[in-house]
Length: 333
Image 1: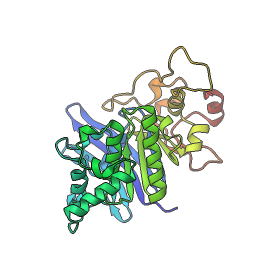
Image 2: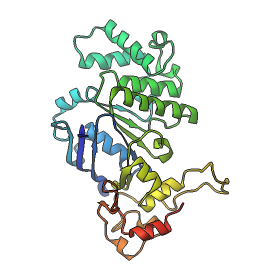
Image 3: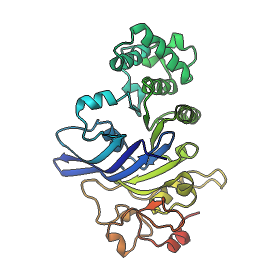
Image 4: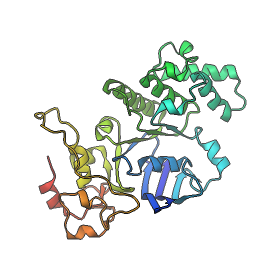
């Protein structure tokens, strides 16, 4: 399956008074049409910066951006601002984390969706844009769309606002959809509905989808492949089955262990990963996860490369010095 979007050695740093903050350090991945790639990790691991850089949203005088992000033959990192304006929304669209702050509170939902359409399709009239907005709201499961198209954002519930945000992202039928924490602050039932909607749209429209989340439980029924990020780097990459059933990095073990299991007795304390993520201005030498890792040893003072370490899974990559036998002995079940 050929890649629609190909990211290679993406590095994003920001000049600060304390020095260069390296938010993303050497991220690479391919994304094909109809595929869902989940990028997971704790807050501050570089997930959102990776996605926003692909869309050109991190460009600023103090940003240091290296690498490439090719959408077919176009390198989005090297493209000029005009190219990015035409690409954004048309070929690559994003569902932001908080729809309440993504919509303008003083304009009606339909007017905002229509404005996005007419900005890229100059031959579309206001009436046609409104009709298209009604179709989009209906397609994402908002009932009575012909009436609700004239509602303001505050008149929608959190789940409905997120559906409207997805409708706006799909307005121009993009090839790549980036969903940045689309279920944050939603209750469990609405979370499931939003994830089901994204999966359905991906299947029906053949979208290449990037799903960003800190919760591995969110991607269990949705993703095809998973990238696990920590402190700006990818520490493990594999298919959904490989990550869930044969994880190779202690950080991934911690993320999986933080999920509450319904098939086991209720623990006295909710499971968690000890310690806190390091400052990106002062990363520890070697493996960034070393200060929080229960399995660290002397060699962890050197930075391991992201390699295939399983003989029967060449596409499963991890960044850990532990040998395979030790991992399988020590990995929590």
